[in-house]
Image (tube, rainbow, N blue to C red):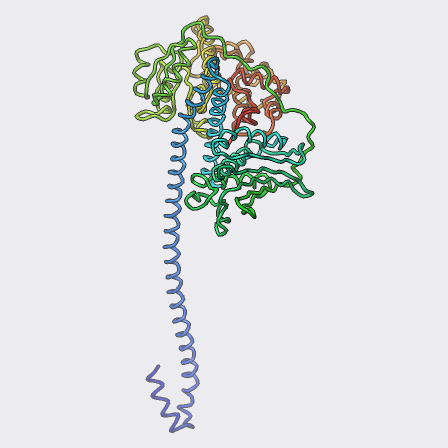
Length: 580
């Protein structure tokens, strides 16, 4: 192309009117222009492709980094969850001991004076408070901003604040601090989740006491205007550095950095989140003279007229079940020596024979040499944990029908379902009380006794076999499908399984030790426990209706007889209990 240019250019210059040269000029010019255009676009295309390749390479590199980071974050999250689970287990065990031993001493309170009895009662309250606080922190840590459900009920602020004044009175007296409050009007009441608002007040009051000087006053006030309810807690301490006020609600802000933030700093983060759940807000500021003030703003729409009606009160406290006449042998598998001693004392004082082991391997050795009626095992243990122990027991023809109760600190539903699917008969969350433990054990032993007595009366052809577990599963599915129907009858269940009522009775009694009607009630109670633990309904009436029971009092009585625990404990605290 260049050669042609240099050849024809002189010809055009020195012989501009040479027809022969002119005839070549047009096509050559056109060709040259086309060539240059093509060349230009080719260079541009190559340059663009190079840029695209570079960008794709960067994107691939960035994607690889993001995938690696996502994997690392997922692993860190799993490690965090495992850490909190392990910490939960370690905390729940001593809390069980504190609660249980306090309860035992209070039951023998004849040798205590009123002051000591009051102090012991407050120790029990604080143990319950720590338990609920563990549950809240675990939930918050697991999902970042925990997906809590509010269980609102009418709360009279005057009584609510007065209760907390009483709870913190000993702590305030030791610090030389005065607790004062002014609620106006006195009958001011709100629809609140009392458990979660307990956490708010406990954090704010304890922080105020901690940072108040001797002789200082802490004032709790509540007022209303046309738009909102305003609650404030102020002290006369050092206050908060002005540049740090915005940080007091940040997670993991430590006491070394800020006043009014206790421990790891998660307290005020939780407070802020719980207030926001209620549709409100909280702010911090310094008083004009001295000290700090925390102010809560709640929408006026949650105000309710106080009618004077009292919340549901438990009737006469159910006593412990009658002791088992035959001396049942219970295998206790627990690696904590103090917990072993505590539980074995409860069981032996109630008339049970107790064999104590510290782990799964030792428990298996005992099972091979001893007759065991029931196994009570911890979940997290070295060498062989409770889950592996239960798997081995259920896989053994000799021990597969031995009832197992898990003592566990794992409160999430997936873990509970995991052990129940394995065939574990029941589980008890730590910390637990003596009545709950003994009622669960007695009920299971009675079921096993009834089953064994019935099986011994059967002919060989009626004895249960492996296929009967399939029947039980179908039976459970049939009951759960229509569990909300109060008119559900055994005849309906038998028809759905294509069985006669008599044959269903024989099979269910042989497998479970319960009549079909009793087994139906057992499924209702187990289903109710799941609903309560998951906080599926805000009231006991709705929970009872969901399982086909139309009378709340009957439901409460039946539930407590089965589990040794009143269902209101899942929804609201007893009047003198504290929460997080």
